[in-house]
Length: 421
Image (cartoon, rainbow, N blue to C red; front, side):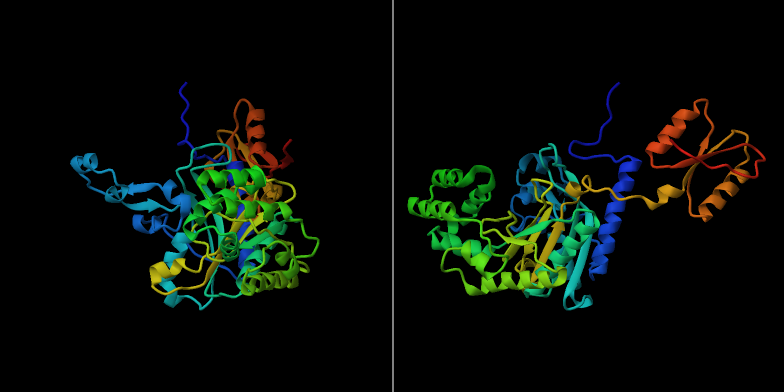
């Protein structure tokens, strides 16, 4: 028998999996709403030029392009430039669509706008474990606030969501792209080389200081710059100070502007006030790959897993590309596909879920009357005609989250509800 599967890198979800995902999403929505964020929705497609404006980093290369309608075979055969063949594309993240949304509706929004977007995105990834071509993103963003309050709100709200999901104990690694630029400037890396240098530095956790130095030399970076960076990394010690100016200064070379340190300290003080402590750690080599980040960047770390559970940063320059006027903006994205398998949220409806197994000759009116009474009492009800093998029906119902059953014959007035399993 030939298998009929979804496209590679995409998934079907059976009822129990879908229900679990929706419970997690409902809790995320509820907690973000409690923090004053308003949910919006944007189209799944944006203009091709907007998705390829040079702000999405490598994700732009992974965009699914939508071919123009009515292209002739001759044009198709003669053209290799995707921009000539496509005028739309599927969104590869939610930040570019949000920036366009804000530029489109700014006059209808509050001065400081707090947005929630929870929706699928598409990337032409090479399918492998943990990487999908369609996946869900959960983003919160604040536009119109350049102060450290915006980052502190995002971090506090996100940590609250993780607590509600049973993932307490998370911490946030934080850095600033301006500090990274200043650090590379101190060590003499030319501005034109910095995008490639940052790609290499981003591998520090995997290949270590010597590996970073070797790769930078292969890239052709000046030996004096590489030597200075390698010596600096090797000389760093994990600070014992709590998050604050002392910790940040201990992990940076001399010459980093005070305003960057003060902004980060302000975030820590505000998060600490909100949560009775600031689970923040300054990481001078946190990079994050998106090209649109202009300031603070951060990632969620959790002691139970080796990978990040989400991240984000400040992208003050993006909205200005669409509006012609810069607007401060910062966002935080939870890695939904990573956390959904880590959490277990009880389905309150399961305690009132009933499979009503009926004989073939039971009139439809009787069936629906019994079902309506159970539903009115708050139960979730599935109708099943009695098969020869009742055990198989009940086992399937239990795997779908049902907790009880009742059997019904024609003319039966009362139902005896019994537990499954």
